[in-house]
Length: 412
Image: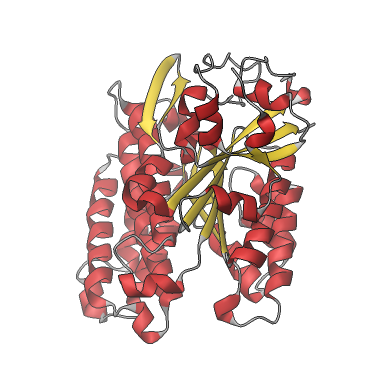
């Protein structure tokens, strides 16, 4: 193997990243191989800042609850609320406790201060309202969708589908939906109850009414209103579908659930790119490119896999779904790490991708992944199991599936 690392590595700068891409993507996805490491989020923040200042990016979306993310977007665009409030209530999965996420939100608010609405930075979550232990109640999404429609269509027309009182009665107490025992015990799920079945039909009818009865939002300068309404509809129908399959007792139950989660992610990403069928092609030019940040496993182009309950589970990632639709307008940068010493991840073996890059002098670099794959000669062996279950080393067999690779030598 005759590989000069200097030939394929560069400083992590916007210009270097864009130089690796085949065109100007609508979605530029930056992955991470583990969660909870602010060192990786600081790299993301700096790259986003450069993309904003040099390449015209105006939106960042992360692996967090899409409904909660609306609170963050309101804060960074208009100053609504306080920084403490949005960090507490605007993120899922504990991401609001991250100092790097706090710095990102603070910087976005400062950047937007005094700018016209058309030039402000935007924030979005693209995950569903889902946690490892279960799923949220569909109440927030359903009631927001109903409220949007009630302000825009005839009362009799909406009431012929359902009233707010009907929704409240069918939803019942939220703890019916959020019971963590339902993740492991399908019999504890409410997802196939008579009420949930009726709610799925009502949600579908309300989304249909949204599609045919509300004017195109761009025509009246209210694109944000339309975008949010469609987000409510996607989230409501997605959550009800997820709860339905939580009640499934077949062996494919977990594979179905993780697939549905990534499908919800993909739908939100396509909407941010203006490729969800709701935006006329001519208006897509108004949408700035988006930086996406999430785990590598959600953004990669190949199938994702993990072991759950001792069994292998495979599914198509959100990145694979989006890439199939957008082609070169979707770009993916995986991130690989050298050490995470406080997690027991020490210097990587020399025969791995991480080991090869670790031997170089750079502490942080962007790598021409396809160029590296082409010069390796023989493929490197499959990665060894990580001593920490939360970290997934890069599989060299998929190196060329990435448009580039970010390597961080040490995170601790």
